[in-house]
Image (cartoon, rainbow, N blue to C red; front, side):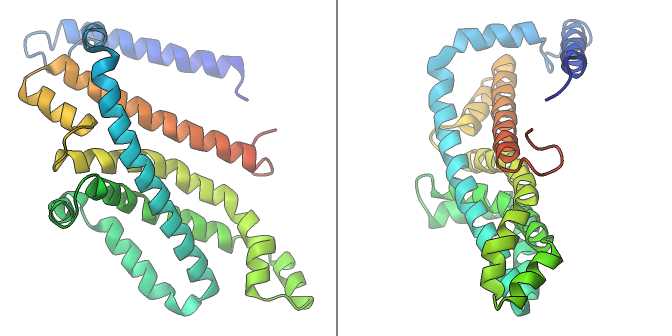
Length: 252
């Protein structure tokens, strides 16, 4: 747990940022309205209310959540295959790297043609998380204690026994490090998918507000998306600390 002074320092830094933002929004950016002050954004947020935000938030969270689950499941399975069958590592890692480097904005229109409903957004969210989680899981599986692995081998255990008894537990800290990064990445992938075509969601709401020149609402939607991504990151980190108390910085 952080010391009170650390919490105080973080809160103070946030307050300073908000004050500077408010001053700049009312002075430097007052004419252009490109960066509205936080009070104006908060006022617009209250005006739009729960009825405007919740349907869009629900849609985006559903898409991002499904993408996060599918993408991470694929990544973990791939990591296990790479560790257990080293001969396929080169081909599968190249494939995973291609999926990571391929701009989602480029394949979004193709997915929109091939699939309907929320499927394209879910696929984009899944693609956004596969490589990150794969690397974390792979590093964790390979960080298993060699002595423990040799002990299992000496008693007649094979690769799958080593995986179940040693490697999976050893991989958890690194795996959760990847899962933390995957949470906001899935949110970003879902929002980008909504930009390319959807009926509802934070991405659609942001496009509509931009076209209507509703600057305060656009900033409000962006801040909501940022807050949701941060909450997903923090929740994943909390679960990781609870499940891996032995790891450095874990729960005590």
